[in-house]
Length: 435
Image 1 (tube, helix red, strand yellow):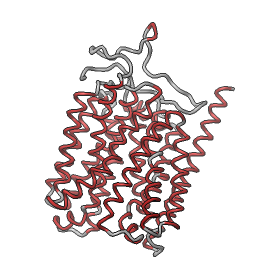
Image 2 (spheres, rainbow, N blue to C red):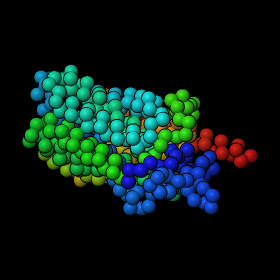
Image 3 (cartoon, helix red, strand yellow):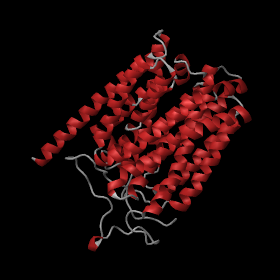
C-alpha cells in the first residue's frame, strides 16, 4: 500500500467532555469519508491494513528505544575504546537528548508541506545514518557529533507517526493507535536493550549501533510498503505551525511531560545501584530491566485505551500512580522482592503519561499539529534530564539510593499540579463556550 491518501492530519482527537472537538476527514456526500487516493482507499484503514501500518511505524520506535537506552549500559566499554573516562562518555547520552530536543521542532518547521509519510521515510533514513556514524566513530568527539545527529529524528519521528496513526485510524481508537506506535519504544526496553547490551559485551559496543541501523532500514521498507501516503495539512506553512505555540494549553502539556515524567527517570537513571542496594546481584539487574520494560509496555497499552475515553483521566492516573508508587518505593524497597514489585508498578504508572500527552498535544495545537506532537518527546527528554539531575543531586547529598524515589514523587506531584491547572482552564473554557 504505497498510494497517496487524502486523509488530513487530525485537528483534534477529542476525549474530554466539554472540550472542543473537531471532526476527522471531511465526509463526502452520502456520508462517505474523504477519498484517500488513487488506490481507492477511503477514510480509516481496515483493521488488517491498519495493524500492518502501525507495526511498520512501531519498528522504527523500537529502533529509537534501543539506541536511546542501550547506550547507558555500554558506557564503560565505549569510554575505554575511545580513550575517555566514564563521566566523559556520559556526555554521549546528553548529546543524544540534545539532538531530540533540537530536532523535533527544527525538522517539522523545515518541512511543513512535505507529505507526512514521506517525512517518515526520510526520518528512518536519518536514524539509520546517525547510528551508522555512531558505530564508525573513532574518537569521543566524533561519537558526540554522531549521537547528536542520531537524536535529531527522534522527536520528529514520534510526532509525525502520531499524526499519521491518528489520520488512518477510526475516531474511537486514535489514541490507542498512537499508543501502539509508541509501544515500540517500551518493547525495546524489554528486548532491544538487553539483547543489544549482550551483543555489545560479546561483539563490541559498535555492534549496538549497527543493530539499530539494520532495524531502522527494516522500518524504512515496512513504512514504504504498508503505510499509505498522508499529505501535509492543507495550507501548511512553518508560520502556521508556529501558531500552535500561542496555545497556553500546549505549554501546560509540555510542562506536564517535562516535570511529571522526570519522576520516573529519577529512579530509572540509577536503577542498577538501587537494586544492588536492595540485595539484588548486579548480574541479575538485566532481568529487572526486562520487567521494567514489561511494565512500561503494559502501561502504554492501558493508557491508549483509557485516553480514548478520557484524556485527562489517563494523565491523572499516571501522575497520581507515579507519586504514590515512588513514595512507597522510597520507604519500602528494602529487599529484592519489594524493590522489584514496586519498580514494576512505577514503570506501569509512568507510561500512562506519554501516549496521553502525545494525543493531548495534537488536540491543543490545531493549526500546527505536527509541531505540537513533535514537542512531546522534546518535553519527555527534558524530563529525562531533569529526573536524572534531581536524582543525582539527592544521591550526592548522601541520602542513599532510595532517596531519588522521594525526589521523583515530588516531581510527579508538581506535574499533577500543572495538569490540574490545565484541566480547570479547559473546563472553564468549555463552560464559557456553552454559555
